[in-house]
Image (cartoon, rainbow over all chains, first blue to last red):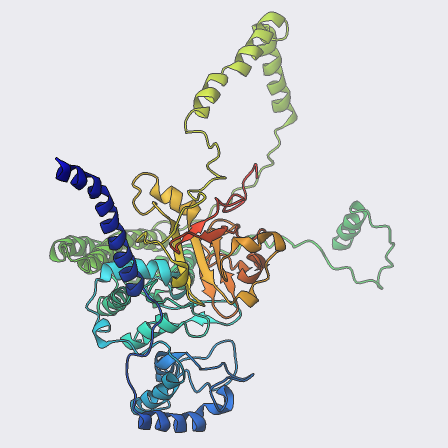
Length: 261
Length: 347
């Protein structure tokens, strides 16, 4: 009788304790799982870093400063991570060929090896976004989900199939066709130039893989609607119709009205 | 003769200048009627061989039409639309090509026939004045007078006035019925799903967003908590409640004193619905902090409460006052304090 009394009195207290402990662990676990500081996972050797520094001093320091602290000509590179170097130099945007509203994609000026060494040096300065893991770059995700994410997060600038779009004052969102999966991933991670950042808390690595899968699907599957005309929508289609469609109608009208010889 | 006409014309238009003939150059302001072109006989009328040629051409066009019809029939069978969507392409292309030829052949053939082989005489029709002659006009007035006197329309006041009353009132039932066709608009244009304490969640998953998730330069496309699970009226609610969440360096924000509490640590939330005609404004430039609307290029400055810096929009994007709850998730302080989207009549 006494035992049962105690048991029934302790029960709610015990339950409360269990729930509190559970909440603490699950909350803590969630906080760890959703942590958004992307630190460089790859370890670089001292030799790689010093080789990278030499390349940096020879090619980048005139704008970004001798210690990557930035200058009037270029931003600070402390904390931008190896992913930024890989994207900017790996797509040829850096070294920039001149000032303008936007640095264009051009021929890559360095070898993969050199880009990786410069990345090592920049990553050694401060923690920053690392080069993405290969498993997220193989376009093996869910293209449907990727398409939905693309339309919500990317399509307003890059166009629904990534065929580019205009921004203000000469800036533009580039065409994504032919872009390497690695560079698409890195662009979301770092937000180069005027593109905003889509960090892993917003679009998870698997979501990024889905978006890459969607873009790969678009490249592999031709449009079902006939000639794409650059996929630019009403402007290109309207121009085509005004010139060729209306031209045909004008030609027929002239023929209808002309007297037979 | 021409000179006389010109002088007359000048007088009629009220010119007060006197021209001395031989000094002023008066351009003739009337284009003279060139008359009818001389009739030109067609080759097909002069040469039987040409006529025969034309006949063959017309027949050939009709044959093209026949072939086009068969081609369209064949294409419909040869390129069936299967579950693979790309089969639509060949099906539509060849079916359309065949049907175009089939119709085009008939049209071109018929016109060519009429132009080359049918009789070729020219007809001139004089253009008449639209005003009727005095006799016709007088007769018309007489008909109306007669109708009035026979019906007694002017004379019988009682009938006339009751008829006016009946005509004025008969649309009323229709007006009342039309008024009840839809639900009343009520406050729906002024309210959205956002309430004090509603969590900001990601579009489309509905996962709540922590303030710490929103790193510098980030953009989140946001829907209110609960919208992702909605079934009825989901799109209507989303069209009003969609929000863009941006974090920019605190020192870049130029906030009005009364609105400093609306942001959280450089994180600001704005309605994504353009105040011009309601397109989703979501082209955010990270470095200039400008938001661009893709439809008509209205540009909003995120650093200054999304004031309009370019384009046809006339009002800034409404700001959603945000804050953070005890668990670190971003929440709304209230609904938008003004109606979102384009202007409307009672705004």
